[in-house]
Image 1 (spheres, rainbow, N blue to C red):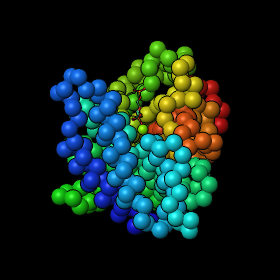
Image 2 (image 1 turned 135 degrees about the vertical axis):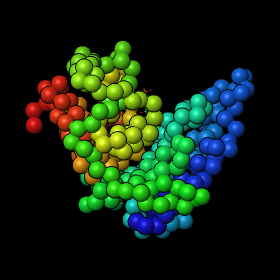
Image 3 (image 1 turned 90 degrees about the horizontal axis):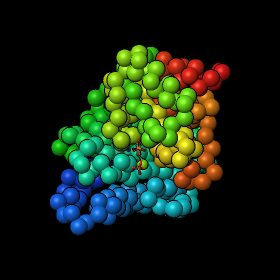
Length: 283
Ligand code: AHM
Ligand code: MG
């Protein structure tokens, strides 16, 4: 596992370099931002593929940028599911973006996730690593090397609310829930990048991030294998909870396709209980 974590550290430095130096074309109005964004997504995906392809521990890769499973080593132990550059359209406007990694042993389902990691590319490069049985660990890069900062523990109750999706397409229950949090004094913190948004809640002690099923996307937007499950693991390890709209732990998800999505809620205990009550979910 250490080899995989060290590889993720090297990947982070390389992708950060691309983000900072790649011509995103935002001064050229004739270039569509979609094309530029695609260039950065594809490049990040390539960096990750190159970094893992000679590591015999890695059985296969599943990427948000690839349709199926990329087999690497028959005798490998782990399959790494990753989103190479989550929120990549935000790089164009100079907001933080991230990479997410879920490391699975055996069949690709949540209960087989053994470790997860994410990188935040912002004013600084930060990394969070989580393995079973211990609190997630927070690192920061300085001159290309990562130093350990602290273990992450969520408070029982936070102050931040990050509600995803288009409000017009929320159902009534969800709107009532989000309005209720604001009426209690919660502050809106939503950048449109799940990595920095979830990172902020983790580091500031708590709150809730939600991406519900909506009228246009009943199964939500965020992908189970490389977005939802890795963060669900980190939130649970930090002492919080991560559930879907039926109250099921996201760590019980069993995707039937690598790109399956799920409604998802990540938070500290108070906010997740408030969600259960607003949604009429009985324990
Ligand atoms: P992406 O993987 O295509 O970048 O999309 C994922 C991102 C998440 O980071 C973020 O939480 C979500 O999309 C934002 O979506 P919305 O703008 O619908 O709130
Ligand atoms: Mg993504």
